[in-house]
Image 1 (cartoon, one colour):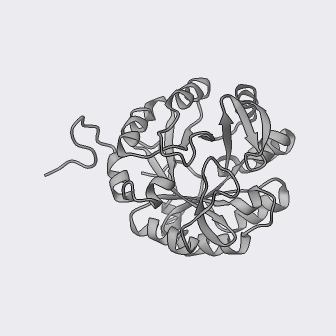
Image 2: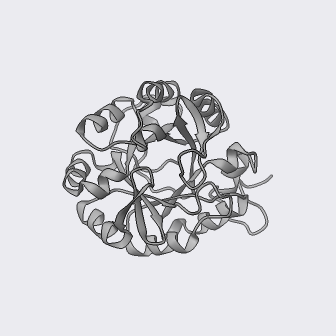
Length: 277
């Protein structure tokens, strides 16, 4: 079961990818971060720490073949203000959007870049810096596009990070309150200090965010073992909707198939995944 994305109706396969039902399991979003035309992973979001993993199109298709429901697709060059990979990301979305939903992120800061992102056919976009620096515009597009807009809350401690995590962007809790009042549909919460470090998510941060908002939360940063999915799965009733997974998948800590099984609807202290015969 997929999470709520938009109000599309109809009987085509792409229409059936979206649902208004609340997920009963943890939705996984394998990440495809793109820099200079390649799929890469960063350590703590720092430019210059890129590790090359090849073709973004091949990476996205591989996650589809392993059963992904969603892909988290990021233009790192746009996020860092050093150009963009828009044409390539459009090709990635075109290749997979009939099979999975795509969340697109990176450098979406005005009407033109938002329109270009949505024109790729992605299911939703994730706003970052714009949500911190341009609250009036953010409120406008939230009202205009509703569930197609998510906001990324990237934090160090409780201080938000902006401009590709290179600048401070204000207080987390004040921003969360403002975005809730604006009607933001969901949040992608990343502990920058955990990202790419393979040391586990910041569960305390995630729990506190869930306590302060009724909107669904997607966890990002630090996942490195299957037990992390077990714990995040337990937090679904508290408001955790999904989890973005990157470096652990690319480095082979586990497969996406294993991660999906660990995030399924069945909770059993000894066996994770679907019921066994």
